[in-house]
Image (cartoon, rainbow over all chains, first blue to last red; front, side, top):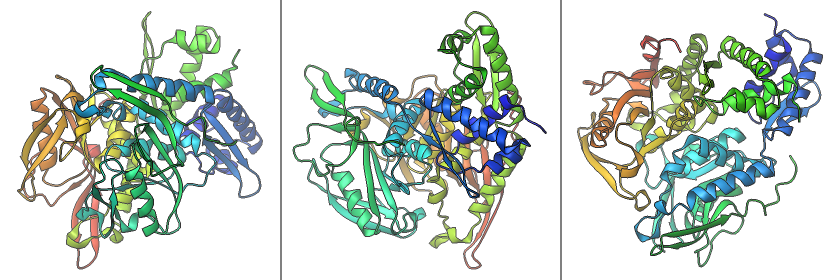
Length: 277
Length: 277
């Protein structure tokens, strides 16, 4: 069954978008579409150009017999600024204020379009780093971690507060919560993380960084390596931050419960050198 | 900035795939690419044909001034059979056996490629139903629920075992766990679910159905409507099932701890009438 160029372009776009960072050989496409490799190469050149122009990402070409093409998801600065501005506006909504100055963010984290954008932004920040696994903590970090993982095409491991029978043997550590200074426990299934894995820690919110720091300590128990830390929202309030090298999209400056005002600004996303992809 | 047809096809494919079930007007595309609506219509016809041929889904055309086009994600039966066979094989791996006959599934639920396929399958089952919200329970249901939600383009609400200060006011119910007969509690943030919402319940595993049934009871507290139930894995073992109308991808028939054998078969996915989309 022969494919015309237009059909190949549509199907290849879908195929590549579903498999970020996966090497796909020209032979595979050539057989899939019963088309000459030279035609496939031309198709890929058009896709690469359009992906770059439209801020979808890029295609990396690996030459040689074992070579092929890889889709790398990447967001242009302009698009990233737009999304972060949108997030700031959404988070500053005074309706989010809860007793005690907490913010209700559950609707944002439940919205697949927003979560996907957040995941793409965080993945863009780490597009040219070697990441084997994303680690997050239950519950609210999970959707964001999975969204970033789908763009980086790596698995997610979930740290829990308590151990579950369906997790098998676990490693448990105690850590001090940064803001409340309470001792807490976190648990990770033993078989979920390999020795030497390079781990990107992702969470929804970071105040003093106690939870993130707990996850960093947990990495040591697994002889895994920290490759980066990324959060949707950081809080300026933190007196003493336990974590200093991280990427944040939005920064919570001040919550005025009486005046019902939430002040947020851009996080450090654009200050982080992301290099070229 | 003019776009050639090949560039339009690539960008439109990406644009539509990112927005399932969202109505996009021809005018929008016509302005985006500075192209005549007649050209855009031709582009969309090629995309629709290719999406259908390749099992990506379809495009629904809504005529008239307020009309446009909607991408509906849908999986062909052949592809669905392939994925369910793959899931059966993965789940039957005796390495998954845990003490007590429990199965370790955390790696599957942490794999974004597998989770995305599971989500697409479950979403395909409900492609022509009216769904406003997906509901799941923390923790393991979350990735699958979000994957299905991204194909149906609806928000996810997460039921928890305990209430959290960041959830605001909550509604809590007690329910009887189907297999252990213990009384348990589940909690949902009051503002997370609107009255009258049509809710698809998604979870990773269902035995007697106590947890799913608890979520159904919770819907009543919110005056919301049950639109469907979908699980990755159901267990045959259940003596008395509390839930009878559901979709499952895989069915766990028998776990032999001594012989280290896990027997699984296809779930009821293909027995459910899914209708035409």
